[in-house]
Length: 133
Image 1 (cartoon, rainbow, N blue to C red):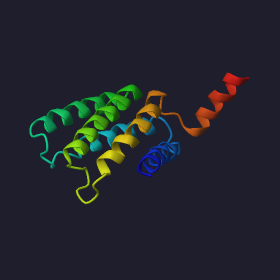
Image 2 (tube, rainbow, N blue to C red; image 1 turned 30 degrees about the horizontal axis):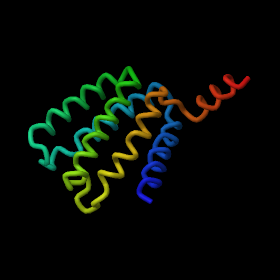
Image 3 (cartoon, rainbow, N blue to C red; image 1 turned 135 degrees about the horizontal axis):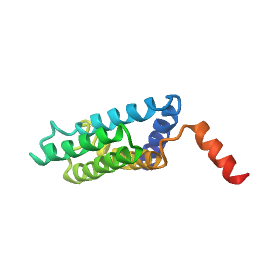
Image 4 (cartoon, rainbow, N blue to C red; image 1 turned 45 degrees about the vertical axis):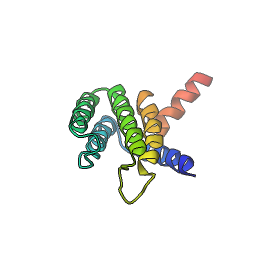
């Protein structure tokens, strides 16, 4: 059930983002992934490496202000840390044991959307029609 719900959350996130016009959609997502990159800072699970990770995600988020691909990379970096935290037993939400696992499943869904250019539903439909037609 956690897999299905995590995928649905990722899909819902991308669909809700369809209501934001470009370039605001890309800027908003760069800010969101920067915040996600700092989510584990207080955990202390990996010591100073958490700071290195946060700096890497922040760099990608900054570059993401002009490139969807960098936002996708940042979400995949966050996925890697989610997996490590889940394995170590130090979830992103201390009261929800599988929260890091859920995040590790949800984040790649968002990353895939970013690698496709963060299209709105309308843009995706237009591309699909033009490919078929």
